[in-house]
Length: 350
Image (cartoon, rainbow, N blue to C red):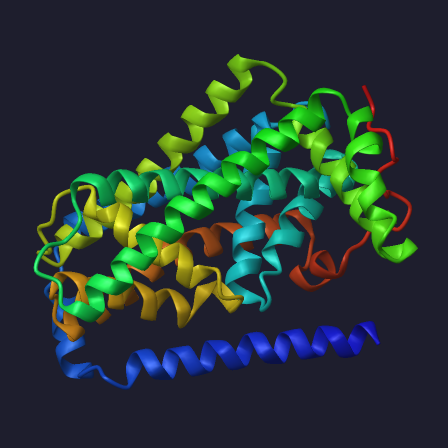
């Protein structure tokens, strides 16, 4: 049954990638796209590549270490290796396998339990979501595009309202989780009664995941910890935004810097579709952001999307493969790895 479900997930992931890529490519003039790529300014592309390498394998790895303080103290090289391997897995394997591969690779490299490493990824994703929404809101308040048609104007307004609602909901959720993390006994008093309405197996699994997540959130035990991780997150996404801006400049797309927050939001939406490396989803979303709201030609937007995606994923994938070979791992074995006896206990450690 498990093998059948895994096969189905892989088939759906690859099918989505193929469908979205076809939809993205079918309206493009390949000769015009090729000319736009050939005319791109190499210096700006090199700067974009450097920003990506600083942001993902280096800065993201350092921030991840801040979220793992209670689980252990992996070295920066171990964090960097696991991060690179995880992103390589997300690029080469379907169904967002890198979300599993990255914490498993760190656990094997640093001798840490898998459960808190997995929990740290969930916490990291929530922090990233809040940061990206915050950047979009800042953009929407002061730099929203003008002269949009009725359809695009309606979509932009829907996106803005969704960002406010999702951001507010996420902040409230994080505040509640922080309230629980301050005194884990509150879980038994406030959450466990509701879990009893679920089947025993599902309720126990949710409670186990919740405790593990709260243990990870417990690393942010002081205001200073919250401020440091928050600042690190803003800097990380500003680096990624600067990478996007540099790539835009390479194609002579001269927009104010905050427009990159808008393109970034669409990129994140595209990457949320579980295809290998966000293929198809990323390209279609980013190209639409530029054509639908800023009047960029389809071929230039398509060239930008292709190059931006390549700069974001190819270098980190190559680095990840180097770490993979050096560590004697395989992506398939890491993606399938489970720690059967490592379920977090109902009461997280002090």
